[in-house]
Length: 294
Ligand code: FAD
Image 1 (cartoon, rainbow, N blue to C red):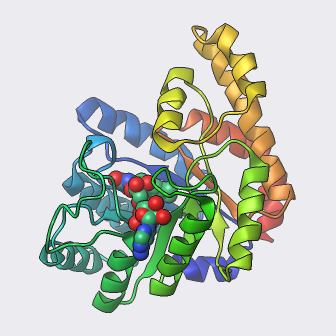
Image 2 (tube, helix red, strand yellow):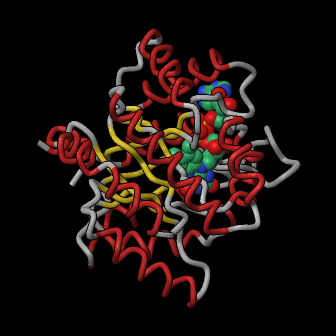
């Protein structure tokens, strides 16, 4: 089913993002965690492509399995960095053949030191170009990425939103945000996008801080700001994994509840292939989730 069809039935969606496991042990772990998360009846799940060095073929194998064997509504991420139009056409037609109707279309990140270079002369520089191209290949529901604190390469939030408008005009049906921790930034961003005529769903992407050093790395990569309040709570306990987990979880529960109470159209969880935090957040916001599904 297309995610846009789900939007017609669900005022808010609750979705999970996974990445393809790298080896046999991670695959086992992935299976156990997916089993637990499926019980929560997510609106849809997504699988990343090539992120953090994961292999691209595994994305296709995982979406095939989740869609065709488990029966989940599944969105395959796909990036155009360094891909030719020929490769893109082949990959997208493969995904279509295995029944995938939902695509998260992204530019991806060029290898370090090669920023701003069109890596494949037969390819595309921007996600918007990929979206226009794929829209001509078939009838897909298309998601795209967005950045409430602006993309690191953009000179200003205004410039980034103007570029986002190009992505919407190219045919993106909805947007998922990069991780963030300050809800006011998200709601200010929504106000600005509406002023620019962007009216599609912009689903907040949330990551619970369960491992401080790992999150610090993500923050460096994305430019997202961690509130002082949470840094000062976690730093004294950064070597105490259980205490860090509890502080991060409490923060994420408050963040999700506040997002939903202020009208966000659901939550997209960056699960990092772990189920514990997502399950515990879900259980804590059951009331808000049930209200959304009526
Ligand atoms: P774009 O939309 O192309 O934007 C990149 C930059 O170019 C921005 O600064 C933008 O302002 C500018 N820009 C955009 N269009 C134009 C234009 N027409 N003219 C001039 N400038 C323009 N990475 C992976 O490798 N695999 C994944 O599976 C993956 N999944 C992700 C999922 C989500 C929800 C998010 C938020 C990110 C994900 N990423 C993933 C990371 C993403 O690939 C990077 O953030 C990448 O740097 C930008 O991708 P984009 O699609 O937003 O690019």
